[in-house]
Image (cartoon, rainbow, N blue to C red; front, top):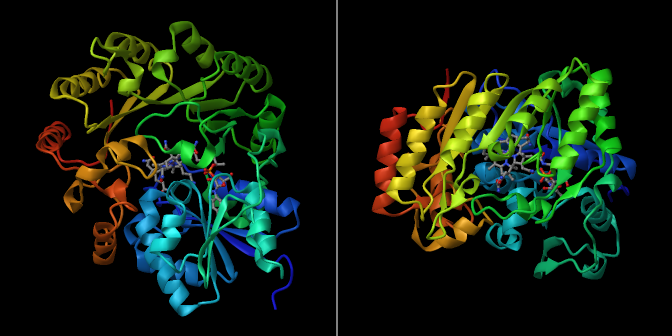
Length: 459
Ligand code: B12
């Protein structure tokens, strides 16, 4: 018999970054571990991104990694980029150790839900959405003697001998201030490997961009943490962990202008010698906002240069507001790094719009301190664009988006390719649109960037 509250493993199954890249502790598993800790559950965080090197990241290596985990219950954060590896590695793990209990959560688990259990019967539970409260309820349920669907949270799907069952107990979204602060003592001796302090000050996104999958896990509305709550976290990074740079992970930190300006004022008053960076829509960064950002220590902005940043044309499709984008990047890049990402390969993007994107990149790269990523569209699970494309997707290992599977990683194994080909619904992010227009664009991009799947250029 297992005692009540047995230890649990939390695995951040993230693609390992290339060497030299800045990396922060995984927020997802850290939040989960901190919430579990408050309820008396002991968890250990395992992170593939710091313990496996990119060139060795194969399903077999992941299996070996999971095999060494002593805990019986293993919760894994699932992302599209790693899902073939996780599926193959957990299958092997369950063959070797059938008593292991596999729980999948995170972006891909939230998007695919019960399909994962139906297709891959060695997976025991799927958790949809935020896990802080749900996971401890699921764990209590697993170790209890009274296991009825009525007492299982409705955001859990499970498998037993009778097939798939759904939790029925109501559970609501957490208010951000109810969520315990990430407790960095829980990453123990791995602390040394994480070289960037990161925070996220919101949960969810009010938009529904066709290519983005954030709403699946965190909801289609935005919930803000209050300043007191997240400044306490910033304080810990600076005074307990010794960081002098804070990277803010919110998808669009400037969404509420009022809140953004409050942050800038408070930050510069409290920490005159600490720098920060964030994700921000470039179109919302007018000159006076940029000045305030710079004054408060902002040294980097990551921004999507997307059709969504443009204005509507007469026929309703999105076009670039090119001059406004250029003006903002020209000015901001005098004071900070600007990393722009452009996605190409939208089905409704005509060749003229596509060429405009390439020309814009050329112009942006004339400025100093500018980096550009050119990404092939990856139809992520649970996205609107996948819904549009689902009947005309094709898998070609030479044309996998570098967004989802960068070229510095170990090539996909034969097993992974078979799995992906057999299950387009589950692994759509590795596919692309099967049209001549896509091929033409693919060739044009390769000509432009010189055959480099993940293009990053700095002047
Ligand atoms: C930080 C970040 C990264 C970091 C990774 C940090 C890490 N985990 O090690 C870096 C920069 C390396 C990165 C890379 C990539 N990312 Co990224 N990233 C983010 C970002 C901005 C924040 C993630 C975060 O910390 N969120 C806050 C936490 C609290 O939320 P959460 O992670 O969803 O976790 C909660 C729940 O999902 C759930 N949960 C999560 N795991 C588990 C596990 C269990 C067992 C349970 C029960 C519950 C559970 O509970 C958590 C707490 O409530 C998100 C966008 C976003 N706002 O979330 C994109 C996002 C997660 N990334 C995304 C993508 C596509 C990528 C890349 C594939 C592509 C790229 N080039 O960016 C790579 C590949 C990474 C990989 N894992 O293989 C997509 C995921 C899509 C998908 N379905 O896979 C997102 C949603 C962005 C988007 N716009 O679509 N990313």
